[in-house]
Length: 181
Image 1 (cartoon, rainbow, N blue to C red):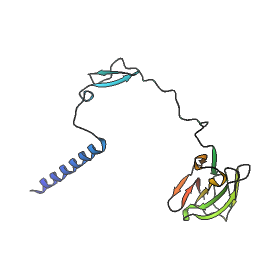
Image 2: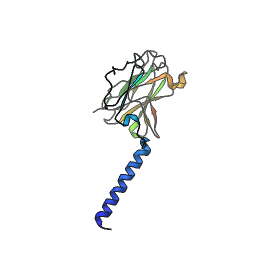
Image 3: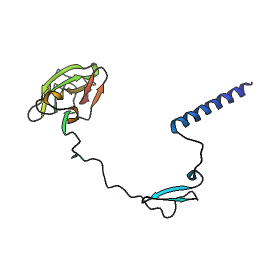
Image 4: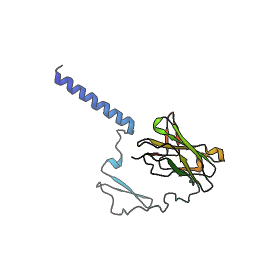
């Protein structure tokens, strides 16, 4: 075999492998159905129509749209008890505040350094908390965690903040914020 033949054979093997993987992943088969044989199918108001020229038939109208929208914020299945940090948090800040259910003990951790404790507080009757810390350096991620079962709630009752994160070997955080310079 010449060098060119080996190169061509190698390329053919790669193409065959690509086609085989595509068939496995996308479930394609070699059968040709009517839609592949220069026919198109369209559904209008629940009726199927076909065209042999490759274009939708002239009778095709715009499909009916559903009037149902995404769930609103009033959806009873959506949790409505927010547990979140107030942001932004800036370098050298010594007080971090947030909101949560009254009576809950919240914990702030430095998520960047494997969950080093920064402080804790009890959420007030007004639903707010403040945690005093040492001055915070820029670039670390502050995480908010709590055991909501202590006050009779479940995870499903809580709406986490925008920085919700779960970090292996550190834990789950209802909210987190990176300290800005």
